[in-house]
Amino acid sequence: MSVEINQKTNDNVALKPRHEWKYGITFPEYLTLKHRLSAVMQPDSHSINGIYQIRSLYFDNLRDKALMEKIDGVNNREKFRIRYYNGNADFLMLEKKSKKNGLCTKVQARLTKEEAQKIVTGDIAWMKDAESKLIAELYAKMLSEGLRPKTIVDYTREAFLYGPGNVRVTLDHDIRSGLSCTDFLDVSCPTVPVGDDFGVLEVKWDEFLPEVVRLAASLPNLRPTAFSKYALCRIYG
Image (cartoon, rainbow, N blue to C red; front, side, top):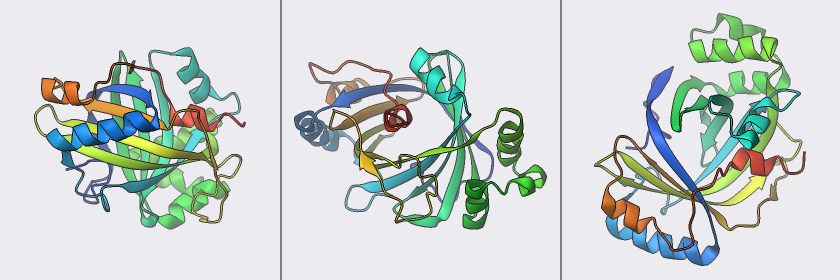
């Protein structure tokens, strides 16, 4: 089961550290990969007709700390975001994604729509008394580091699962930036397409990556890259 949209996920869940590879892909590569992955992996059960929509609101400070650490390849870094799926803002997740020594970890906590809207508008005093340690941590860093909502990142995702190794392979495309708009609960907030590639292939696993998946997700011209949808969506500011 996908942990990303598991609506039974409890507050302050820390997910197991995982390996992660990313590749920029063209449209022909996307079609080839989709066919190959479908032959050996199971589709994410939460998808609708094989796909689902993701909208995220990313945080950064006035010095763009999260953005610059990503660009500079800082070994130990983190970023905060709020995310929901398929336009369903009744299920919102605050996430802190960290990367250290090549391994990615993620901590999650549920937010209500009202809580998320308050964060967007700068009404954050309530956060200091939140039961969730992650919400309290975001509040502390909004005060001490000046973290603020920075940009919306929208995209379409197709996800494939493979039990051994807890492998998750995703094909993300139609990546769009909200530019300066941060009211991500407002469906009328304009977004624009970004990037030269059609999309991105992401391969995530725990202790080992089965050879059958490695082969299915491999194409001659693909090379791992430090791809970041957040960084891509910051291209306009």
